[in-house]
Image 1 (cartoon, rainbow, N blue to C red):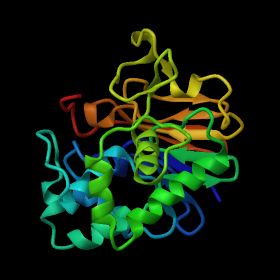
Image 2: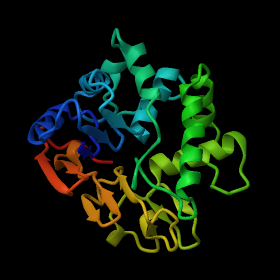
Image 3: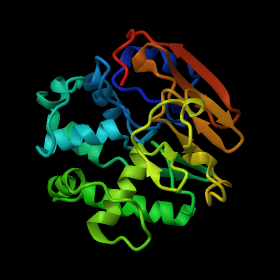
Image 4: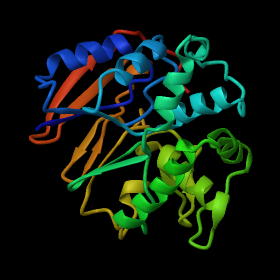
Length: 272
């Protein structure tokens, strides 16, 4: 079995189709992984969701912040943003099935020494703690009361993570880390607003460069950070190369680190 991982698609279905065509994927044996942000800002979010939903068990997707944004819109707990391209999904006749499929995707996927998350991890989280937190949040998203849970996640404020947090605050803080984290301040506080590349972020430290990170022995695969771009290190793989902003969609085969690159076929959008 081979495992192919693709960076943030964000509704860029044409680029995804061209990228996958480069990959010698065996349909019954190999797996296709996605680092999250399957949809939004690109032109074909609906087509992307439909195709991946029907691909079957060989597709593994973790949730990103844009995927959660769609779930919040569908739950009626958040308003649409000016740059959203999700109207076709929300008006689709199979909307219920698509939303149901999406909310059942995990926040973290672990396979052997590989650990996939959309954005980042806190340095003192072990692999076990990471999976425990992710599974607790995922269980609520899969439940019959997922709309109420998302209301709490969206409208409950932004707590900083602390080991003493409990209940909804603990889940909300963990969810932000999994789907939005990029930097830490000099005081060791997670910083979610800054989006520039590390060389432009004075006084901030990328989450993966924090000292004594407990997941350093895992190969962590992530997206979310288009200004960082493609990054391949022995135990770190960053795959958001800004396809939706007119740059590239990137894939990698984990077994030999072979890269697959596809120039964006959607054109440059308005980057935020």
